[in-house]
Length: 221
Ligand SMILES: *Cc1c(COP(=O)(O)O)cnc(C)c1O
Image (cartoon, rainbow, N blue to C red; front, side, top):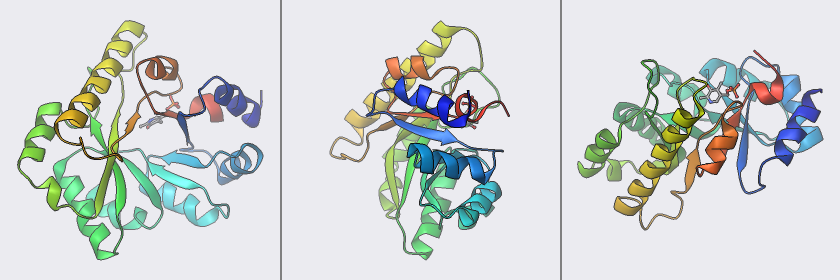
C-alpha cells in the first residue's frame, strides 16, 4: 500500500466524528501536501518546534499544525504563529509561559493538558492531583490567552492490551472528573486525545475523540 491507500484504510476504519491527527514527524513536506490534496487531511502533528516551523513555512496548502511533543519554554515564541493546538501542556510553568507569549502577540492559543497515565519514567504530564491543586489556586483563571480544549495522554509502550485499555480508561475518568468539577460550564472543554498507530482502536473504544497516528499512515520512521 502507498501513503494515500494506508491513510484511506485507517480513515475508513474510524468513525467520522473522531479527528485524525496525522503525525508527520521526520516525514517530508511532500507527503503532507499529498495527504492534504488527495485525501483532504487537514491536521498534522509534529513534536519538534524547529521541524514544525520549517514545514509550516514550506507548505503552501492550508493545513493545521498540532504540537504534540515536550515543549521547551524557549521554543514557544517560534511555534505560536503557526500552531492551531498545543496538545502537550505538561506543567503549570509551561501553561503560564504560553499565556504570556500569546498575550504579547494578542492571540488566544487552544491547548490540551497532558496527563501522565503510563507506567514509564520517560513520559511527561500532570497527575490529576497536580492539576487539581493548580486549578484550585485560581491561577488558571488568570490565563486569558489560553483556551483549554481538553486533555491528552499516552499509554505505556507495551504489548499488554489490558494495561493499555486500563490507562485509557483512567484518562477518560480524569476527563470526566475535570469536566464535572472544573469545566462544567465550558463547552469547548471536549477533547480527549488518546491513541496512536498501535493502540488507537482500544483508545476509541475507551472514548477518544482525537487519535494521533504516525507510522500507520506514513510508514515506519
Ligand atoms: C510520534 C507520536 C505519535 C504517533 O506515533 P505512531 O506510533 O507512529 O502512530 C503520537 N503521539 C505522540 C505524542 C508522538 O510523539
